[in-house]
Length: 154
Image (tube, rainbow, N blue to C red; front, top):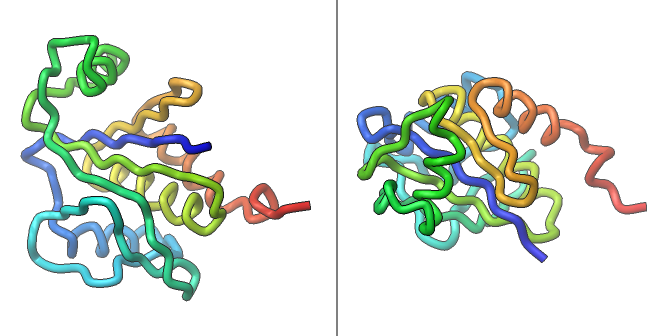
């Protein structure tokens, strides 16, 4: 079983990998990019991070939004759901994070999603319960990520 989180960021605010790293540090989140660069933040399939001192591979992807006006496409559907709070246009960026069952992967990914929303005026969306939002949503993600007990197996 897997679930996805999406973060939309307007194309004029899309960060470099180093800016993402700086945001994670500024927010004091316990995750860092393995090799931040001055290039635009980009990932396809796996993103290597260090979470609480351990290497973690996040299943992630960065894509440009297309077909925003078509509600039958994923980006169009998300754009419709967020329309009253956040305008998504063709050419804006989406960070997609896919989580499976690894607690470190989920927690690190939630922190990354929160940082993207808070630091680059992004908008988050998760498809399991169709919850979405800006700052409050990001704060909820960070709170969930910090709740170690919630990820412990009985």
